Image (tube, rainbow over all chains, first blue to last red):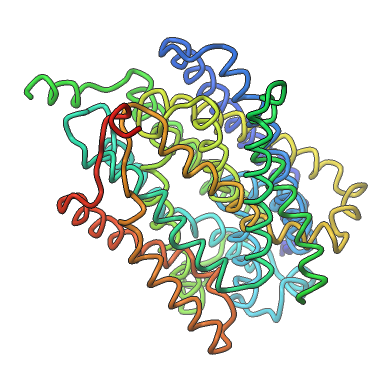
Length: 239
Length: 251
């Protein structure tokens, strides 16, 4: 009878994961090519596109490294291949880490470490299936209604000003929920957010100076890193 | 007026491509993702029974995550537009893809929900997805050697504060983006004042009562607050509190 350890170190799983990742890279490349060509057709200059690509690459590094921290946490309980796959698709760092521990208790173990040692293949199968289907609910909305949702806020119809308001409401609502939660829920989170904001404002002011325009591409990456690094100070003071 | 209506019906070719082929590509990826565990488990003769997968304790876990998925799709799709398909497939939306798309639109001076904005955010999301996959692949392949660095307490602590740091840097972009494009939304923030008040009271109450932070419940909160934000914005727009003006007039 196969155990969880047999499955997480399975060459078949590795091959399927590699195939899936290649597909996603291919899908991203096709999207990139189509979007890039369309940007040029719409009059966005190559310089602007270059700047967007460079900034996106640089910006992606730090959040990706945070995901790597989560990857290593997950590897200790689920092995390299399955953790790698789960964090490369659909879910999110917080979701995968949370579901992996709650599912371990749901299938009868005290924690994920005990599951790794004792779980049978079938028990781990339950974990794999639940992790795979858990976040699919979003697609039940996106696939049938994605077009409708996007068009509901499309600004091409300039006669309808409500669409402009509605379009901004989604982002504003995200901020209106997150900001009070961050400010009133936890002192360190609040200070990290304020530090990130102050760095962003300072860099924004600096970027207006002649010769420092290049800073614009890095404002988000630098302020995010600054905010994260400041957490070490705030934690030492308030925890 | 009839001319305007006709313009609204026609769709940008890239948007049309995304809503057709992006959707097809997403369905293929989904089928593949669901198939992986079943193929591996069948090979090891370890496919669990339906009762093992669906029971009280597992369903209670799924019930926590199902609303989060709905919430993400309902709140992020209108912001991301046609780049939503690729974004949802590669995940990590709030902590990576959405800020990346917002940053790209700000840099290129384009607005969300326009053909230009959606094309430029698709470029950013695609680049970001490829970059993340490469970094994760390298990390997985080199895990034995690099794992100790990522297990340093300082690195772990800093990683826990990614979202607050992101919101700090994003807040600036939020105000900057409302000033781009041909039209300007005046007092848009008034529409979400009720949300700010409700969530502030909830967050304070939970903290005072010793319940800690609502951070883990943000997905639920957005799901409940989004309809309130839309209704409130609509009322204020009808009453003329929120206005949409031409950029020239607005300045």
